[in-house]
Amino acid sequence: MSGAFAYKGGALCAEEVAFETIAAEIGTPFYCYSTAQLQKNYHEFESAFGSRSVGVHYAIKANPNRAVIRTLANCGAGADVTSAGELERALDAGIAPDRIVFSGVGKRRDELDAALISGIHQINIESISELHALSAAASAFGRKAPIALRVNPDVSARTYQKTSTAELGTKFGIDHSQIGEALKLATSLPGLSFKGFTIHIGSHVHDYEPFRQGYGKLAEIVKATRAQGIKVERLDLGGGVGIPYDGETLPPFKDYAAIVIETVGDLDCALAFEPGRRLVGDAGVLVSRVTYVKKGAARTFIIIDAGMNDLIRPAMYGARHSIVPVREGKDTITADVVGPICETSDLFGKDYRLPAKPGDLIAILQAGAYGAAMSSIYNGRPLIPEVLVAGGRFSIVRRRIAVAEQICWESWPSWLSGHPV
Image 1: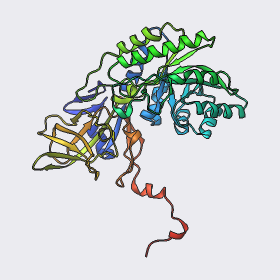
Image 2: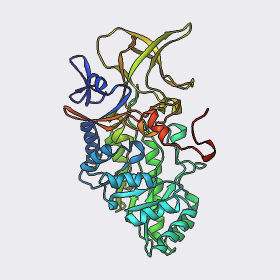
Image 3: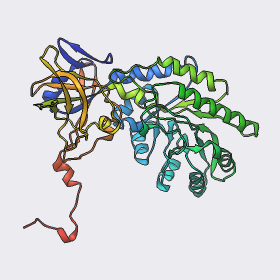
């Protein structure tokens, strides 16, 4: 459990606010984020590189809530965006355009136009086709777009298969065998200004050796590029460094920083990163209430009011989060924690020791990244609130989106107008 979340007088709190207090006011389930933990994570990331100045572009896809983005922006973070929508959120949260990079394999023409109009720091290019598309878009504005080529180094991130992005056969990046062709276009097409390279090997990487391999290959590409007389100013080293989930341990983050300096630190390039989970993962908690305890012939289930539509990571990746009681000292049982969704995969994990009475509150930890960001209204459920805590204060930063409001998003076609008889 991170320092921002701790038991005080037997009650689990976010900083100085008891989860019981929040639940009594807004109901369950809800997400809660800690300002102190967000700030701590950012400063630990930045300071790991010592006196060396690095760019930190928060990967908004991890948690796009504007209050979270603004909190990190106030610490000094820029943004890494993957869509025009995330670009809009970053700008609205107060991040300057020259602190924003745009990643992603499928940027549409309108998204490229938005990036160019905004004047962002860098567009990360993932294919030969995208080079041509961006050059045409930038030329139409009479501009040169600052770009970095994303290299696919064919390195296994040794993480979840669905979040590994740097092996040949994945959709991400330009295969290292095609970098020569990409460089020729990047330095010759009229609408482009080549600045350097970027790399991102995957998400929730908890073994740092793949970073060493990937960054080592990137260093070789930089040296080969400069040997051709092409200037390389910047390296964007991506994100992906994991956090400890339930039962996991990670090497110290300083070990990752040491690998960075060892592999690319002497290349005289500006260094930037795109951390997401590392900044927000352990700064968020999903609080839920026990609805039923079901004792079957083979298993015992604690059924809670949060579902896989609220936190899909366990169902999608088999990820296991720490789950703890909100009130210490209550009777517990060993059971599987499940939600109310009509899917067998609506399972948060097996064999947890937790309170066993309807009405008890539980907290699913390490839920700040890819929780609310990936939530849905499946099974006709509301989108749940998000709360930000700062010291002894809390504020709802996204209200509950009820089903009645969701229905208002829809409209009848002319042939179905009116109410059914």
